[in-house]
Image (cartoon, rainbow, N blue to C red; front, top):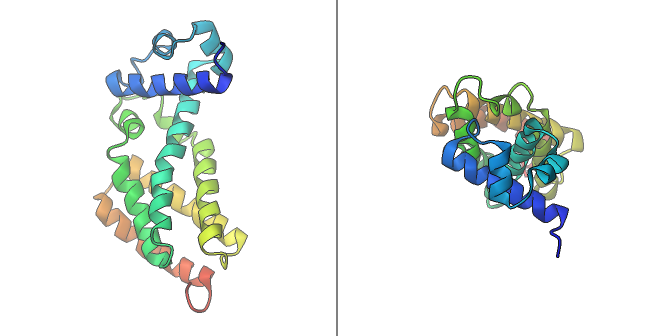
Length: 195
């Protein structure tokens, strides 16, 4: 029985993660990915087209998986929006230190091919993260106006990515600093009673 395209894509992206963990992105060749995933190189190229497109797909998949723990942390403090901000930022900033993809991006050589995907070419990653966070805000705090939720989510995502890719302090200090900056906006967005 032939594997479905979704199953092949999942196997390929898992192979990328395994290879990145073992040797880093720079040393991961398309041929190695195909062998590890159990697909032909032709199939790999048919599904992704290029190494750059495969890198983008890998980064987006990892972003979505990584953000699930962040969103779980936010949901876990739904009764206190201010604590939820801190919990989500903490999950993001401390979790990034142990994430395979983030390590590959930050510890790779100069000219790392993955770094632009979360910095200068990060729009797809930002859009995915912003959409997920906007959805959780609407779910937990419906009194947020849709535009305010989008503005807040986009700002948090950009700030968090910036603190991960160019850290100037410990994750704990960054959590406190970003939270201090965002709490007045959340107070405003939640209106009287503050959620």
